[in-house]
Length: 500
Image 1 (cartoon, one colour):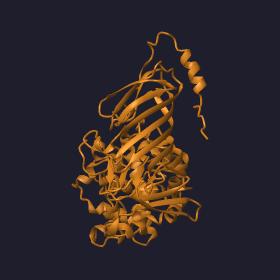
Image 2 (spheres, one colour):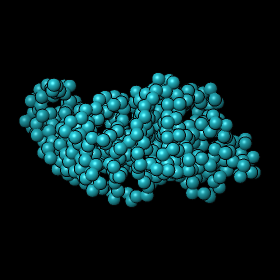
Image 3 (cartoon, rainbow, N blue to C red):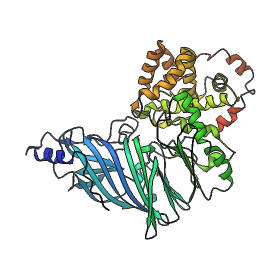
């Protein structure tokens, strides 16, 4: 049975269009960027997306992708034209049912001109029909579409959407998702959220995934291949879906020994960060040659290489911590990356303490002592590292030092209240480093300006860190056992080298 879908507000939108005055001189194009100084061309202005419905068909043998994206949004200005971020070939665009003109510009801009200008506050339904071979497309000299022997994966940061769906590609414009993917029988399609249904006909199987909580574009993932899929429920009641490529080889055991602990670790992190913010959790390990992991919302992406040295529960802790710090509460601008990475690294330190392999203070003292004052490590300011240093190890490790400094300044009671209260205060929204400082000051009742400036913004090594620093400096070889594991995951999030 077919169900006719009428977009919410479509009738109201039609009446508003009829009311547009003949002279549209006051209407202007939406900006081709959302205003992020790190990535000026990322995202777009003039509208706000509420939902993406992606209906796709993918052929792994040829890497051919065909799709229809239906985007529900609302204009935020009197709009004559607007952009989407996209790379594949577009055959048709409709806005509120009417065909719209379209053209490409820049590295990844799809310019759309509706048949009539759109007043501010108009609900719009944008339908884009497209096709192409994602692996043949690049922007700024790189691609985030990763081919595998039996399919492909879309997972990267700070961008990944352009290669498989049109979007307003910036974390400020979060939306809900329905992702429906048809693949040849015997192949699976994995995405975020929960699997709503599957169906099969004429040699194709369709997987329908839904993410009902707001999600940033770069946190949306797609994996197609032949997977072994496991399902479970954590003791705390969180459904867990994990997937492993059937061709992982030597890394298979270590990957499973790590990722299969997802339910346990979600429950453990909930004790620090509050209730898990989504309806499912899990991760997948495809047969790729990439060298990073990514906190793709509810379904974390892991590279096999990260299990080459054995099981790596600390890495899983890092990525799951992002579900609170980075996914539910997303950054306002990419300069706010410390809120994502500093706290995810600190979660690893908490895990080391839990495992009896070094306290957070010991780890902080060791990191501090490991970098002399003239080490370039200290020239990176985690509070605003710049686009070229956004994923440097200092953002992670100096970022975690800053978290420990906050803890020691405000005391454990206030610190753990902050740690748990922050994801609740900004759930499913966006926040900045300045917002976090204000929140920490409000909860602790202490001024933290100087502390934040010292640990997050000054391009130099701060004064001696803590009481146990002398011991760590005197015997730097006597490091906590877990440090070697944490050191091995320094590049867990860092991109492969690429020219921007």
